[in-house]
Image 1 (cartoon, rainbow, N blue to C red):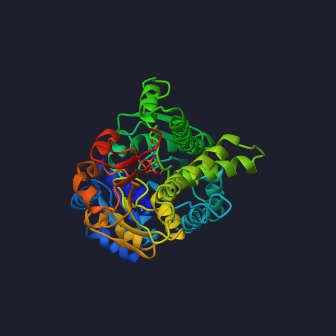
Image 2 (image 1 turned 90 degrees about the horizontal axis):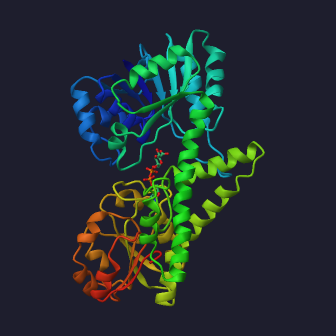
Image 3 (image 1 turned 180 degrees about the vertical axis):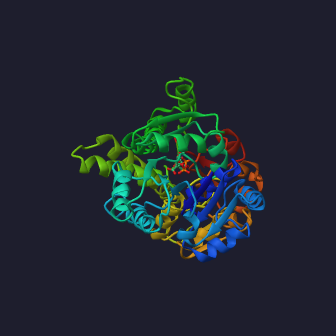
Length: 427
Ligand code: UGA
């Protein structure tokens, strides 16, 4: 099937590329000329495992192409996936101007029946609004569908092909059939429902996962006070299939471009519909508290942070990505700097992005160099390869053998045996 994708951010590029790999003829559209020129050559602007290979493979197979022109890109396409950003506004509400702008452009350029698929995370009612905007100008036949995405950064390609479910909200039998055809090859549970349900499933899923994280973070704070180990408590809880083992890793809180935005967004949506979603407010509060924890701990151990040199391992909001949006690591660095600390950092892929938002910081390509003469080391992102570092060597390089592990990555016993003053979260 001929498919157009509008927006080549994480969602758009991954969705478009994976759909082309399923055999569809996909054209990805973006305003950014440089990005499109690079993509045409197979140069992917983000770090995402397996994506570049798939892009190159499907360009060669003539299944995937890129353009700056919306008019050309959507010509002849049966479906158009809208994958533009929906950032948070200052008050926490969802910015929909990009979605509506695309709707307006579509209304001016549609030349034949199309299913307009909304992939961006949007409040309930947005799909209907998109329909209204298109109808204002385009008088022909078309449908609007909501198909939220559940991909995680860092494992987006794997998540696409190994999805737990596909949710499609549609209003007509014709658009449902077309969506079924698109995902025919994917042997996964599919729920076809109305627009409102589909739109809400996405918010509910992200908000629930964030709630799980804040819950285990609260537990970690209790664990520390009663002498328990949150890792064991989480494992014990997770074995109950009703609870599940995932998203119970305690740490410095959730970040990224989705959870913080969507929790705030759902809270706002509830408010505008006259309902006070009390739980979500607590989820946000706990997350803010977790980010502050390691700053307070550094201060407690080092007494005063003024002119103290601290090393940070990890800058992105989680491992396997170079994305630093709403990263707890960045927030912690800024707070340490505010208290007068000098920071040096190592991250295998996120340094370039971090350099755009941080000042007065030294980045090192070599993790060992990053440790030299520091008073403490903070682990802020859970890259598994950190475990294999020569920790004996790191102990000698640090001025004081202090490791604050914000992700519970390392083994406390091993670290203590090596002579570190080692603190982690909830154990
Ligand atoms: C999240 C969802 O997991 C995806 O299903 C969804 O499609 C995506 O948002 C989206 O809305 O686009 P993502 O933001 O890529 O995906 O990252 P996650 O792997 O979910 O992690 C989010 C944050 O939670 C990270 O900062 C991570 O370190 C933190 N986290 C995760 C924890 O602190 N503990 C955990 O147990 C799990």
